[in-house]
Amino acid sequence: MRFDDAYSGNLFIASRQDYDKAQAVLYGMPMDYTVSFRPGSRFGPARIREVSIGLEEYSPYLDKELSEVCYFDAGDIPLPFGNPGRSLALIGDFVAKLLDDGKFPLGLGGEHLVTWPIIEKVYARYPDLALIHVDAHADLREEYEGEPLSHSTPIRKAVHLLGGKNVYSFGIRSGTKEEFRFGRQEMNFFPYEVLAPMQKVLPSLAGRPVYVTIDIDVLDPAFAPGTGTAEGGGITSKEMLAAIHAIARSQVKVVGADLVEVAPVYDPTEQTQILAAKMVREMLLGWVK
Image (cartoon, rainbow, N blue to C red; front, side, top):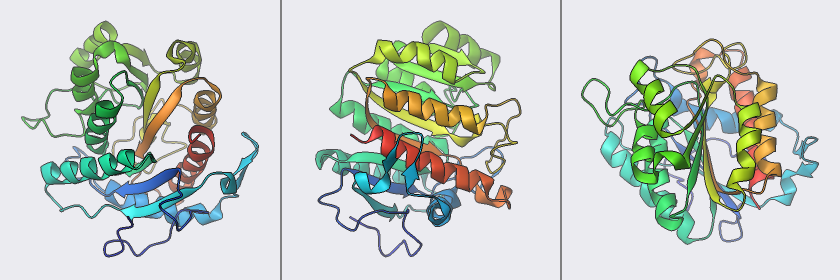
């Protein structure tokens, strides 16, 4: 299950070599073909793995070590460059295989459009699925410049599939007037903030299967400048970690997750990539049961 021909980089810290015994599988989706501003997120998954070597394996927040979670790093899915339709199909097929094998899928993007085929496959297995979406951007467009396969559209597609009342968006601070109107009227829509509204919502999701998608640009560029569409006015890294821990300590059943839009070229300090790796560590320790 590892993409050896396409992946020659490092593995995420403390990952195991045994796919069969793994509780979770980490995988990359190196696609940034539909971005509307700055490309480069295709290089995010590999760099997040590489900088993970600088992390401690122990989380003082959760009092757990990575040795307590058995997870497998599959490397990056080999996607056909420039072909979003075929790439999305390959992502969907891979995630369906993980679900069939009883694995927790934890994906690294890549642009946010990569989340769409994952939601389709997870919903097929969990028809009462709820989606937690943490992002600077609403991603609620039907299309972008005539193209429905765009990084501006995955959450609108998810609303059509799941129903708006099963989609929870946090931290949104950018979008069209129509997107904000739609979000407020049709969804559980919490602009500007993440932790406080999430803490209020989580008890209502107790016992439900939940998929979580996090766009790194929900953070203020002061904390995560390495992303394609940076947007001022975001949350702190401390709040983001606290939100991950709030989900971990809740009664929701997280059945999969992804972290997208890390574009290393725009952050030579590497603080974005290092923060992303730390977020992955906390997601593995907190969400994989």
